[in-house]
Length: 340
Image (cartoon, rainbow, N blue to C red; front, side, top):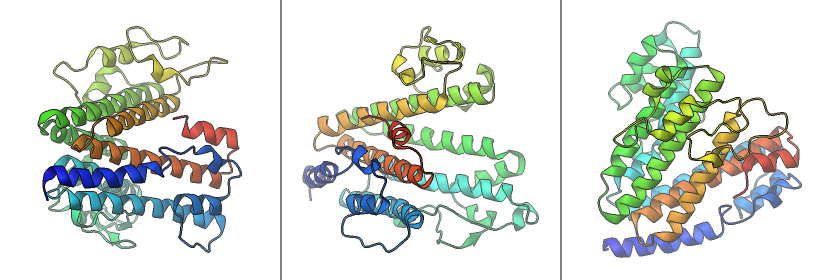
């Protein structure tokens, strides 16, 4: 099967999936009424559940994630040999499991560090694309990281705290993603690189706002934790965000992306809310991925964009289910998922 034929085949399948997804459909009807069984029928039609509402919400989150993984695995199989940048994108969930595992080990008080055992929750099975061969409901000690690409975490756990390890894992994931995106050649490589660089820049902006707001960190402390993008880093926008006033209602200065603060309150304003800025960043990335998906037919760019759109859809549906479990009012839940 030629490369073009594989991409033609995959594109037809992906457009059909997106057409019936909550990337295209309005999510607000799912929220109004907040019936988890109705949500199950809408997002995973044909499946039968006999569970109470809270248990069903939890099971739905797991099944949505599993459904996405099955789609991603099928894509990688059709495109074999799988493009490394897509495989690494899939491994985001393994990085997250290692984050959770390290935190659980460090928070445990059950003996010395090398004697502690914990379950990895949530557990995601990447099957043939996994670096770690793990099983659900099993308990693991730090030895599970030996000989893997995460072996360096063992040293970090001896001297660093949970926050530092989480930052290092995030930074390593995005740095490797950027390297793999830049290795893709031709016009499709540029489209993938542009989307990856946008995501990393947005992630850097969110990290800056969180570290400055919640931890009162200085620029000198923050910059080493960021993922460099471009030859001159930090660039003008990054420097502006590091220096701007966060307690001013119009804090732009030389920062060019004012849309990042579009949802900040104008009444009783006291300080920039990083959570609202993060939501705007996620929506901006979604719109960029959607434009790439529809604007780059028969290419790796289309497939990469699809993967980001599916991640976004599962994240939004998970937010809806979490909000229902917490009995959030409809208007708050609609605000939490944002407007596409």
